[in-house]
Amino acid sequence: MFNTTICSILGIEYPILQGGMAWVATAELAAAVSNAGGLGIIGAGNAPADFVRNEIRKAKELTTKPFGVNVMLLSPFVEEVIKVVCEERVPVVTTGAGNPGKYIARFKAIGTKVIPVIPSVALAKKMEKEGVDAVIAEGTESGGHVGELTTITLVPQVVDAVNIPVIAAGGIADGRGLISALALGAEGVQLGTVFVCAEECTAHNNYKEAIIKAGDRGTIVTGRLTGHPVRMIKNKLAREFEKLEDAKATAEEFNKLGVGSLRAAVVDGDVNSGTVMAGQISGMIKKIKPAKEIIEDIINEAKETLKMVNYL
Ligand code: TUI
Image (cartoon, rainbow, N blue to C red):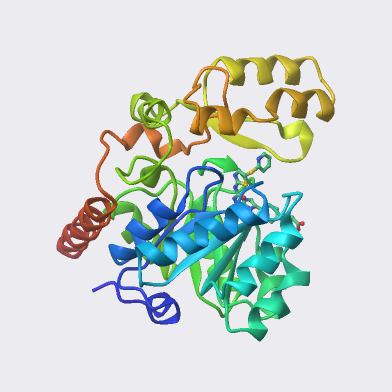
């Protein structure tokens, strides 16, 4: 059940991808998700190429299943990271925060599946023309760097505009969300926030607890003036960002406050002065569970949801 074309393209059991979150999505989390039948993805974020290579090699030791690497296109190390991903023959690459156009041919040449995250129909169409294998249509409900459209508006418009599989992301964390995404025409889902709260996720416990404590209105988008808006849990840093925004500060002042702040939250557990990126679905996440249980619960709930919809 739920064996969609994305499952055959990627060689996975369930149409569930784990978001490649910077600092959060390490080899341990990616391998746990892949071992549980989803697609685990290592987040390269702003990390240097050697760090990424090490994570890839760790993941290869922890799983024999396919896994991916997310290349964050704003990274200062993007060129070197792509070289490493190609050398290591990583089976799947997702990209975020930009247009991966100039790198696609290199991945295709070695059979690596390329799946960019896109926030609009225009970029989805452009990516299809360049030969990508699928796209991830990510709504503004998601954590981290966000576009403007919601998942429920973006996904069906992208599905109608392209002939490649579409994966829905943003605001999904349970079986109802999976069924909704499939109903919108998606072939799968990508989940971030719920996997931060996986037992195998190496993020600091304070980060996980901040998500568990957050309510439905617990997140805010900051940094619109930088051109790279970010959704994060409301905390002391978010309030400082808000003040800067009210004062019409420069992007430079903004970036100065943000430098190193994601690492501070994820690695050091500083959830007051650090950036706790998380999606609007945080309010629904109540418990830390093994990745396998997260996936099984979603699949079982999706089956129950289908029965309920069928009954109506
Ligand atoms: O990339 C993400 N989420 C991220 S990246 C990140 S690291 C970061 N930190 C601070 C500022 C900026 C980045 C944290 N979270 N999600 C995928 C995603 N991609 N969301 C939106 C986009 C996107 C936006 C514009 C993709 C393409 C794009 O294209 C613009 C263009 O060049 O056409």
